[in-house]
Amino acid sequence: SLADARNAFYKRDYETTYQEMSGKKLSESDQRLYEKSKMILQLNHKFEAYGNYKKMNMPVEALDSLLSGFLLWQNLADEIVEYDAVSETEEIKNQIVDTLSSEYQISEQDAEEINALTDYDYTLKLEEVTGSLSRQNGVFHSKQKEAEEVPLADEEMQQTEQQPQKPTENVLPEEEIQ
Image (tube, rainbow, N blue to C red; front, side):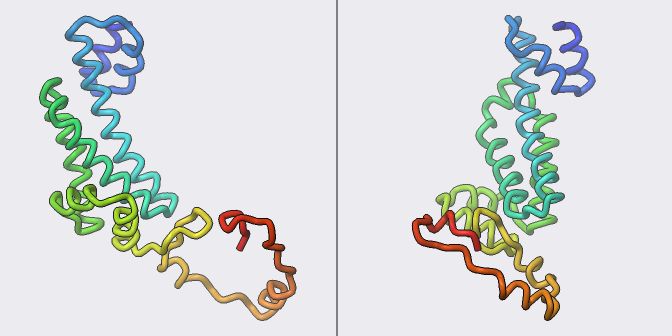
């Protein structure tokens, strides 16, 4: 119900507020709560995605989540003020900015400059900052992780060498299996 949604909002349960109000005819004040909840959830999603990517050892995607969260906050600036969501969104923005600074030594000005890069240069910059190699078969490989890999034992090395190579004719370069 809308009453439940309002109560959830004041308990900072923005997910419930958003879900309960989504698709319903709302009064002006309820519409404000709905829009405010939506913005908070969008920003929070970016910060949560950062944590998930970090856990999955996907450093470029983790950094991208923070930078896109910062960009989203900038792009929503007018709406944040319009819907009086400054304090709630500022809290998430500060988490993003603090993490960019502490984990990557990226300032707010640096984040703006990186976000302004073309897609290609943006990707290269994120790979540089995270110490990642370029994409290989659609997967990012970390230089540090590769350096930590233990060389194969002689027996495993011989088994690897004896495996036949997969045919490459009639195969697009992105379909080749390495």
